[in-house]
Amino acid sequence: MAVEVYHEPLCRRYYASRCSCAYFFFLLIALVGLILPFFLAYTNVPSFWLKTHTYREQPSITFQHKVLGTLQGTKKIRGIDRQMQIVFSSMTDVENLYGPELRVCNLQNIELDFNRDGVTDEFHFTALCPLAKGETILGASVATFFRTKLSSRARVDFDSLAIAEHRDGMGGGSLFVDGDYVLKQKWPFRAKGGYYLPYKRFPLLDPSDHKIKLQETLLPNIIFGYRNRNNTLDYQQTYKVWTPSPGVPDNHGAYAHFNLTMVLRVPQQDVLYTPTASEVLKDAWLKYLAIFVVVKYLLEFFASFVAYNQLVDTTMRVETPHEREGVKATSL
Image (cartoon, rainbow, N blue to C red; front, side, top):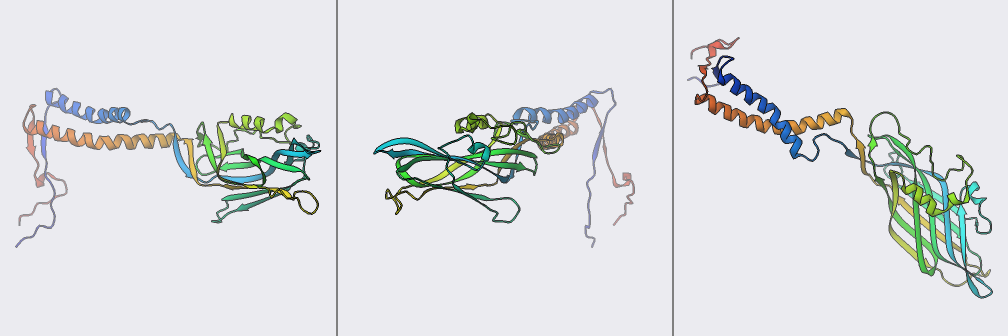
């Protein structure tokens, strides 16, 4: 008893002259099969040509050891509360611009890399400022400066700013702020060529670039210039804890200090960039191919119905195994 070990389909072939209606009909079917998927993909998807794309990356953040902070509050002078401000900084050129408002504070910074991939995951910054007798702190703000680098798909290197602040009606002894450092983009990065330095000519509070003026050190002016950039990193203060001051002087008749702590976390985030020509063509081809498969199947079914029922004049020929090259038919 013979057993089937292999099978292959045989075709019905339809023939017509080049000047016949059947030839032009099937030529039209072929053109529709090529052109129709393009128009369907072009009109039905949000953007057939990919203009922007995103990927995930954790920015490489480096602390520049540039700090500018202020403490606002009151000071008792002859029993009357007077407004006062304390300024602290890690930059000598900035400190020289302030006189009696300047206060030497203990500044500390810790960088943590939990997964040991060479990219810092957290920054812990602490400013410990001594207070004189009768001084009460009602508000605090600090600006820290970083260097941000992206190197996976978009290659960009620019300086960034993180600001923590709080105001309270009750005198405080410490401020703890914990938040994320999040990328904000008004315009996509480019993804070709070497590293892009978009703000090299306009650095943030850079004493090495030129002689710093007092107006440049004011936080409103720094924030205004920073927000005018197309791409920034914003420090989102998720949690804030304001600890009231004890209200009791120490043995020397002065409050000990004000402690300002900022925890800055750097998560992975979406980076918007302009794709290269190869990415645009690949994405467009996939969109076209997805619709082409469906259109081709429907048109082949329609063409088979027209040819089999002889709706156009053709000559049908059924293929046999003997007509296949390299095939030798054997009777069982």
